[in-house]
Structures are given as C-alpha cells and as structure tokens.
Length: 269
Image 1 (tube, rainbow, N blue to C red):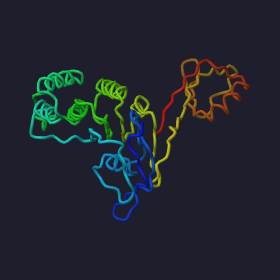
Image 2: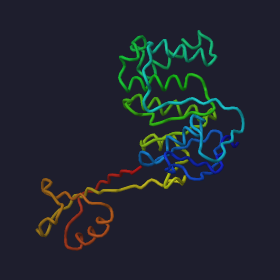
Image 3: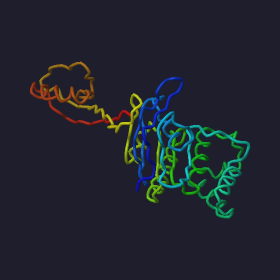
Image 4: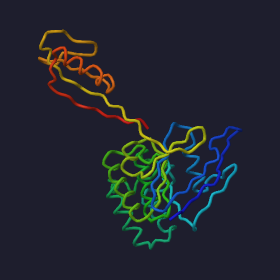
C-alpha cells in the first residue's frame, strides 16, 4: 500500500540545489536506505519526508495521518535522568504509566542500559545517549521510523539488538527510512537502497572489492614476483581479483603450485 509520495521535490540552500525534482512513491512496510557522501542530501530528504523541513518546490503526499519517530545521529542530553526522560516520552505518547515503566526497564535491559537508567543524561557517553534515543523511538510503534546514522557510537552487542528490534517493527508493517554508511545495517534491514547524485534519487548497487590471499609453492625455484612474501616453506601473495584472474594461471603454467587461497570481500557504500 502506498504511504508516502514525493512529487517533483526540490530543495535549495543558498542558491545551491541539493535535491532536484525527485518523484518517488514509498509503501507501507518498506525499508529504505539512503547512502552517499556527506552533504549529498540524505538527511535533508529524511527531514522533508517527515515535514521537519519544507521543500523549495514540489509536493509531499501522505496516504493517511502518520506517526513519525526519529533517531538522530547525535542525541542531545536533556536535564533529566535517562529513566525520567523515557518515562515522559512514553506518557506523552499516550502509553499507560505502568506499561511505560515495564517497557522502559525491559528495553534498557535489552540494550545493556539498566544500570545507567538513573544517571543524568549529561553524564552519559555518546553511545549510551544513542541507546536512549533508540528506546524513545521504539517504545511505541510508529507508522514511520526515521534513522539518521543510528549505529553511531553503539557497541557490537547493542547493534545486534537494534537490528533485531527494527526487523521486528518491519514485520509489524512499520516503514523505515534511514541515512546510513554502515553496510552491515543496510544488508540486515534495507529492502531498497538509493543514493543521491547531482540532486537525483537513484537506485544504488553496492560495489564489492575482492582481494585474494594466495599461498604458492615455488617448486621450480623461480623466485617471488612483486607482492609475494615468504610464508614458511611457501610464498604468500595478496592480490586484487582482476590481477589474480590474469596472473595466477600464468604462475601455475610456470610451475608454481597452489597450496591455499582465501578471499576477503569489502563493499564500498
């Protein structure tokens, strides 16, 4: 079901076009990642989608009244303890006080935060503040969840919990939009990935770079080529995929013997 439609959305700052005539429809339950270099317009598009910022031109259409929750990259401390803040956010959202208390404590335990609930927020680290920001955004089910670099500062175990919680919300038809550089998060959550280039919204294909570590036996005492290093009785050769495809058959034809091979993949976002 269509939930948000952008019609010819443009945004300019100081005469510079950041978004240029973007038209796109998003559906309920979709999870969309916006990737690209800093300043390309990812956060601006998130703000326009949620009406936190107005487009310079174009139209934004909601299929119905929508409840948005937002997890910013930098969650600002307020003059409250984490527990006081989360209790207030829950009651503002209309949740019964007893249920808010139970849910806050349960989510704090999930995110390894229970011992810090009564700590003033100004004394919390960036990563811990980010956890508080996550909890306030998911304590009540929204229609739309906006994520702006949501893993910033979070430890590995908390990242796993976060991914699990967001996928649970998707299963409940929450629509997710995120600005992100984390390939792990994009792979785990996003159903569609876009980039913004020259102000235009385009589908994005991850670029995968493969590097091979090849273990070779110099049977004919030919001597190592550039890039090879001694590896016990053998030689280790680290080489990118294209060069490996070209040179490895040549080396084997010369009399080198292959003793092992590992591949290392990295993706550029």
